[in-house]
Amino acid sequence: MGMRMPGWYDIADFGDLANRSEDEAGVLRSQKVFHTLIQGEIDAGIPTDRIVLGGFSQGGAMSLMAGITCPTKLGGIFGLSCYLLLKDKVQSMVPADSPNKDTPIFMGHGDADPIVRYAWGQMTADKLKEWGWSVDFKTYAGLPHSAAPQEINDLETYLKARVPDVGGN
Image 1 (cartoon, one colour):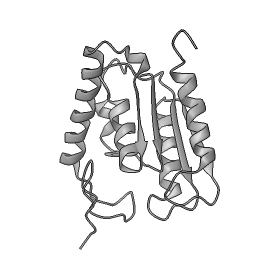
Image 2 (cartoon, rainbow, N blue to C red; image 1 turned 30 degrees about the horizontal axis):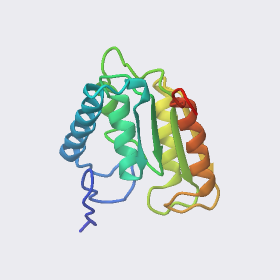
Image 3 (tube, rainbow, N blue to C red; image 1 turned 135 degrees about the vertical axis):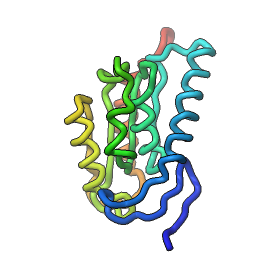
Image 4 (cartoon, helix red, strand yellow; image 1 turned 90 degrees about the horizontal axis):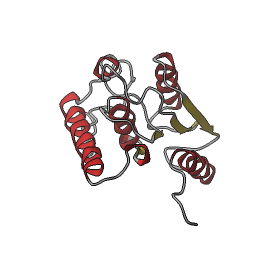
């Protein structure tokens, strides 16, 4: 009997990433929510290059997946302590014109994470690079499944580069 954690999708088990079952319906439902929220911001007049999708753990996994499959250009995509969802299918879900193929991705992961294994984060970054994305994957020594001050600083640097201040001071 697996542990169930309500969130963006159900996690049936934290077993081996390659062989675990995924809540594909839940993932696809959340992907639709992400894309609808993004479209709402665009409709409200927010320039798409100032919209960044990102999160931690499940939120990070959803952000990577929804980001690379997003039908509109984004300013940035980041995932902390996360992994690639629907890894055998997600590449085929990227729009033909791949509007985010040039959107740099930031990933951070602790090498002591007992929940979302560090190797899964590394494999995710490698796979995204293999598919043509620019991924900045940063490792935080001794960090378990949480964020570290240095990681937040690195994320801030990424965000400032992706979404610079507008006018004024």
